[in-house]
Image (cartoon, rainbow, N blue to C red; front, side):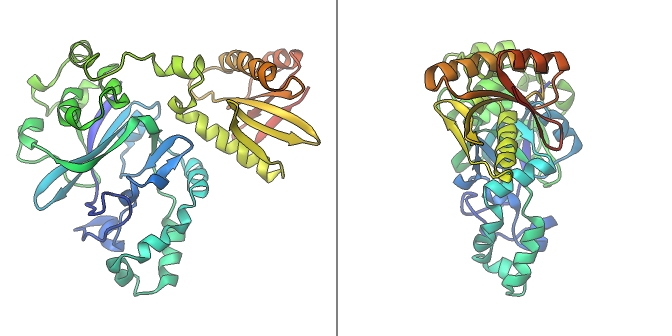
Length: 368
């Protein structure tokens, strides 16, 4: 079951490309003069075709985001008016280990220069760059969320909200630690004139079922079935595209599967630690590298939501095609996100293909 929410974040006067120094009334932003969400619209927050961003969270939101069933509309208040800032759908949460990978590859640690530009931040840290650097080294790994880049959109100008139209009250939730669940119909009313036609966020909002238990405060006339939403918005505003599973497994569109980015980042890091230089995403091949004078083509398949045998079946067809089209002399390798069964390993090796898997700590190779 899906959920689409309004999520309060700190106000920013630079359209969330970097910290602006707006004074906060409470919480982390008041204590330190900035919020991690102030980079949410930064082009530097694009990681391996995923958009990474931050808001505060709750256990409930983490549960929805386990399988990409969370949609977030960040909102902020300024001069007593609440605004919608953008939208992200098919949102996953990043574990501590994943945040470690992402922040390292994006060089997030270097963002102290942008913090140092903000006068209020310098004042809080006693105009000491050393104090700020020490603080940021401890607090820079806070990019909690990720979603496909195609399912993220930040508005050029904030959109004023009409709280009465959303909940029948004078205002929607404003505490940064809280959130306001809304129906997909309300979300579409807010967004539809401010999103490009056929945007994938619209597809996400009109497909699947949303958790009715979250919508107790929403007026009945603001709730529509997915069938009615599809009839209203499909064709005019949204594409009738194939689903994400089909696009990933059959068409090979890795951008629709955030787990793929994580697995590939881990594998590339593993190779580099072993002094092997990888080449990524060349000629549609996930990873190519030379080891002991041998060229390897590697096809990666995450197994977070699927059994290893199905991941292997899909990978075999792709890796054989890459070999045929690019280099028949290259050694072939399938990399999966969890340990396959013994018979699966033997099956892959019988095809003269190596298989490597992630065991939770490192990669285990089974060479032919």
